Image (cartoon, rainbow, N blue to C red; front, side, top):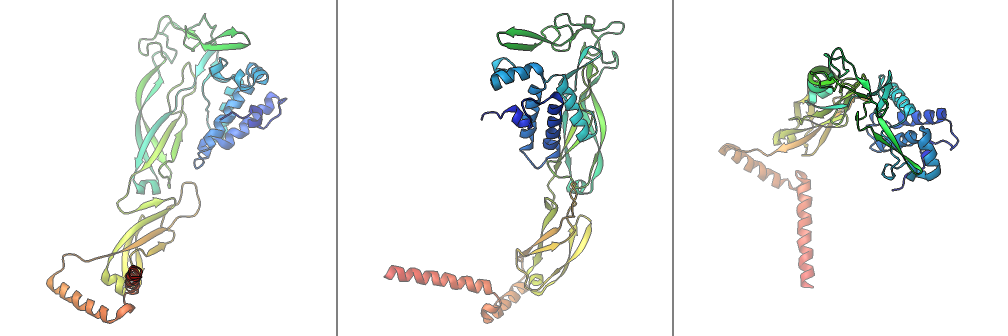
Length: 385
């Protein structure tokens, strides 16, 4: 599928200024960010499309190449790709994440004090909850492995008494640029591997990485009403950044375990309620469970299997708000088993009284039998003709 024009994606003219590009991208990023559109699978596609468009048009060199050669001029496979967005892209990405989540965000590298810094990786933790825990919410402790800043060298990667030096190959940029005809090829520096610095005397604890792996315990507050597929974002609880860069985030993915009695669909709960033939025939009252305790359910006489009773407000209040769902109870009339001789005798007598009453006691069975008889009569007539 061909890519859309980048100016069209952002909804701006080809003469748009940097400020106009930034404003357009910021609006689209906030509108289509996947975390704000959990029920829309297409939101991530639109978000990435806007991100790619802004990454190119906010970079003067890439924009010039795109204006001259179109997508071929900035396609990585054509040798024009870069190792991330320019400085303006890093700024806007941080702004957007701050607006959406109330904290720092972003991705890729930036610069701090002349050194190239990198945001730490995001982490994922799968959290299993019971239905009761998901509906009512709770605080849970989780233990995760993660990369944290090395305390021995304060994250510098260099042994105490020494320090990292600016890479002489890339002059601290972390990337080297090569000119190939019309195109400018940008690659990660082979000497410092993109860090922009070299360490001659590395820290013996982190071996120059500036980070070490540890396990940490976190308290996660699970809001009431979460369901399978929801995720909880813990800002800055992911891996530590490099060279003093910001930490990544931790995403806690919720998985609700199957329940012995209830199944959940959105804000509603469903359960099956088995009753004996006497209660189904004569009617009665029985206690049924809800997540808040027992409630009485009135069974009218003549209730059939499959009859659904709705108990309003006994379901789930979604984490996204709205009214509380309902509990729907489906009746299952249970055939008695392991009968005594006397019980069988009574059932025979009961059956005889039903047969004397004709279709009045079992209208569905009588209608079905009539249909079967008509079917065979028609079949005989067709064979005889």
